[in-house]
Every structure is written in structure tokens, then in C-alpha cells.
Length: 177
Image 1 (tube, rainbow, N blue to C red):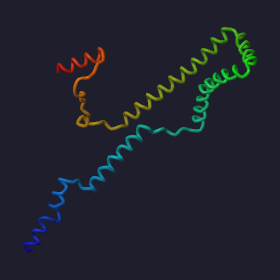
Image 2: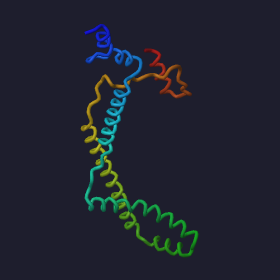
Image 3: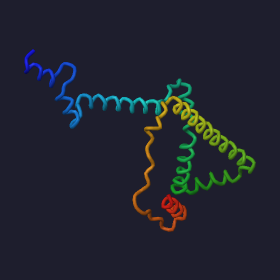
Image 4: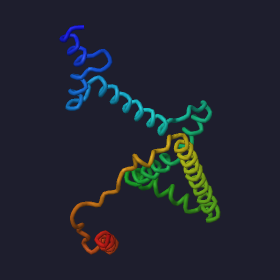
């Protein structure tokens, strides 16, 4: 093997490329960087897919959810309709309101209890469903290593507290460290 072949072998060798390795110190390998970006992008999409996965439900569950969404908008639009009807036809509105005035108090209490229980039960059910889904998603996500934890950085310089006692206490504590 000649001297030129030995130099070329040293610089552009089959196992190690000295020029490429030296250049990558100053500028990242574009192909390797693209692969790292693709891996990071794929990992973030996988994380989002885990966080926002909505299980597919049957037609009956979708129908019941649709029906459960009706009362609140119907009550809101009905109330707005009452205001409009009072302005358009005050006599018609007065006749309807005098009819409502004849409804006995226990019946109003019953209606109030039904509406309260309906909205309260729906609120509780949706809250529990949200908590259950959140716990399931958190359990399925990989744990973040402590080495990747983001450091807590205090803001530079003084913080303007504008008479806020909690901020003043925090600033005194920060200075005492």
C-alpha cells in the first residue's frame, strides 16, 4: 500500500472518516439531525395521542350524550325567548306569567329540586369521568427521569410587589437564601 493510499485511508478510512468527524464538531450532520428531529416529533405526537385519546362509543351512548346536552341550551334560549316575547307582545307575555303565578310553591320546589339534581348529577358524573380518564392517561405515560426535570429559576432583579404581602414575603425569603 502506497503512501497516498495510507493517507487517504487515514483521512477517509472505511471505518472512520476523519474529515466528517471533524466537520461534525462545528456543524451537525444534517441527516442525523433530521432523524433526531423526526424521532422527537414522533415522540411528541405519541404523547399527545395518549393525552387526548377519546374512546369510541356506541350509537346509544352518543345519542344519550346528545340528549343530555339539550336542557342547558334550551333553558338559556327559552329565557331569551321570554324576553323577546315580552317586548313583542306584552299582553301574551302577561297572560303566560299570570298563569305561572298560579303554580303552587311546592311544585316550584319540586321543579327546582329536579333541575338541581339533574345538573348536579351531570356535573359530578362528568367530573368523575374526567378524573378517571386523567388517572388512566397519567398511568400510561412514561415517567420523566429526574435528570430531565426543568430547573426552577427565580426572575432576575427585584420583583415589583405593589403592596402585595404574599409577594413581599416571597421576596424576603428569596433574598435570605
